[in-house]
Image (tube, rainbow, N blue to C red; front, side):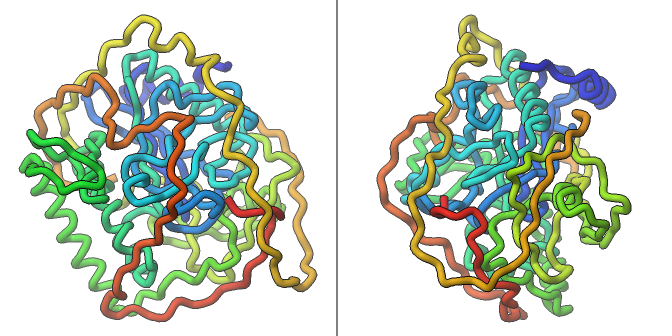
Length: 445
């Protein structure tokens, strides 16, 4: 396995970080972006690099049951045992789905990864070159003493503009809960402590009681420094959201039949076209000629159908959200490494990925349509809120049970239902964009 590249090491040093410092991963489906955050020498997380995602499957919203092809959304804890160097998709990091929240809500599925090969059935797929770099950064953080790192997977950047666009979604109640965790990270630049009780996420909670995913929450409190900063951010966001709805911000078009997404960088390379994209601040920008692709696109890649309007997002160069600023936050030092803890890091893990889906029910015949064939093109490898001062929190000696699982966990076959929420004031009907077309053949994952 390759080491961290010289270019990446130079960027780490330039951003006042160390090669072995802790990492945190954020994923945004609609933008098709994966962020690597790294703890700097001042003890807070800063954005190191944003990777365009080559392919993800399903739709915006959580994974509910095995076979629905959904990529997970939520908070997941990654330990060395979830790192697979022997993946069928070059290298893989198992998200650990289902976590405690997923299990409490009857959600099923397993072996949902971040991996290479740019092909997805419920996973977040990168190019091989990208996953090699991501894997190396994670491996070095484990060598530096980080016992686990957090993946935060969101449907989109949790900004007021995006919440307004998606206000009609039946998943809005779930997304508002995810936004709480998003806001905790935005105002502290620390990995939020995640617990689950009453079948919901709880963030940075301090309690003498025990958190049980399906049971009543114990009495707890959130440190006032964090709670007040989060309340203020949410107050500003709510005001802006109401203004956007009152101004008639259009709702996002329906994604029916659009299986997942692909960052515009890859779409432009596959189609060999010039084009526009919406950047992370919602502005229309253009790439001409198409930007450099971060890795090799396999010939078998099948891009998703595009939504037929200019409201879809997919920024190329992701940044921390525009309303956020670096925060002065004290952070606990990484835990000590233990001998033998990483002895199997390079050989542990089964080749088993998410299993092949069962055959799907027959679909109505679709009109013939021209398809694009991806041509492999080898390429060289290649945020802001109120300041909160916090006392260091001792690092957990073991990963929290509320957000961890093992790669081979077996779960009951119960299937939950997507959350639903009443439409917000000013909500407009969802616009149908296109019809279903199964681009993969076979069943949905």
